[in-house]
Length: 308
Image 1 (cartoon, rainbow, N blue to C red):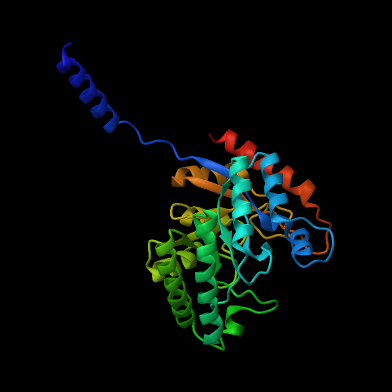
Image 2 (cartoon, rainbow, N blue to C red):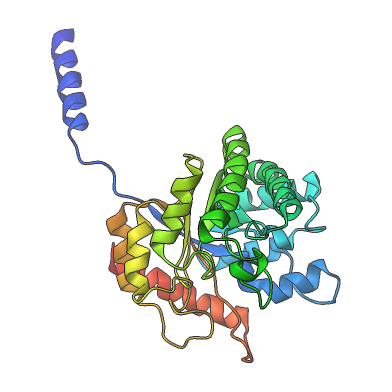
């Protein structure tokens, strides 16, 4: 046998592969558990009825989702840590269904002037990074916006300047990112229309953190600039995860997201990974996730096909 011919063919194939186009980004549809917020809270708080995380996971699989984001609020005992047995049960069921864990998230407030609250927030996120790692979640979602009803970052910061508040947030998230690096979990900073209203503000904070283990989670429903699609496009190339919303103008808007336009932005950015869908309950209107979620998932799936 002439081994030199085989060797030449191997080298030629290897060289050709080296110059081949990189693989196209893969986009995988996921469901954020917050879409079932009221029913999940009914279950974990013992108010009767409701659904649990495993039931929502099975619902996501039934409707064609490749990923699932089990938000931390809906684990038994939150804000305490869940039992390892529950985490393992959820992870095992996801594996049986072939559904990946796309991420998770917790509550925190880093805009407050109360340093003790910020310190507790760091401890909380660090502990949940370990939960995320056990789950196999690649990212944990944290807030840079004030999570207090009828409050803003200006009111809870006690009159601090924007620069001061950004320093508080960046310092806190930097500590969390070190924990994320240790456990292989990225810290995702979500814009939520308060301290972070624009793509420029979101990236300014991420850059202030200055860690490869921290990046933006692009919430398509909470940018407050003149054109939300421009804001989305400005950060899409840096995204570590997403939240795909029904409207780019907030949960009470009846203006639907132009999903084809959105998917073109995402594909152009080169992002590869999960696209979690999150539907919200409009104020003073009926909301049935068993109807709303499947309808929106079908719309997103169609837009993905149309832009493939």
